Length: 310
Image (cartoon, rainbow, N blue to C red):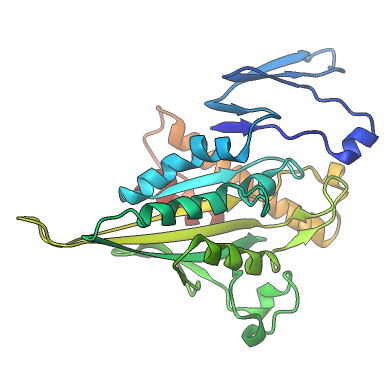
């Protein structure tokens, strides 16, 4: 688990707010300037990786995402989740910009760099899908908008047939009807993401002028085919990674959510709560029983990568 702290925003600076976070190599210190009588003024939290204001996107990728690419080529599934309250910088860390790419474009660049170094006895194919989970419904962000007559991101629910999560003995967990696009370069994935982002559900709140109202999931599938060598016959290795920009956790009272935006906030918080329950169950050494993957579409979709072949 890594924690990244962003600089104060222009709005926060205009309000003369101050940072309450201090860093060490392995922990962060939070200082509450106005604690309640029953509260401590300081809290120390430990994490595997700490990224302060000077941390670069390259550093975040090398420590958090590069090991996932290693595992992908070894045949393992994996997931990277960007979690935090609305406006905390999740989309910036995952997507970045053309001048300073985030985790997702850097993962794509690394995948194709490594494919270029594979020997002649190995061939690799890569496909990608891009979907959002909006109010507990899966929506394909790469669906043909002209064919499906989708005018806005919010009417995707009625414009498209609902996607369903299925289970297959050979394919594992998959989304029925989700489009897969073949990729030959990282630039092609960047183009697909730009196409999908234009349709992702966002709305202005008091905390964020462009608050994401959905979980965005980039799914990269890779298949490696190995030629017969010596006594070893032909082999095929399939693996996939989920790169997830989660919707921001929030309190309706702070964001000013009402109407449709309030409905979205409730769905977001319920989904994030379900994710927390699954992670707690997976990391609890005393838990030998049921993991509640089916409690949300997000955890159901990520089941294999969170606790199966991961």
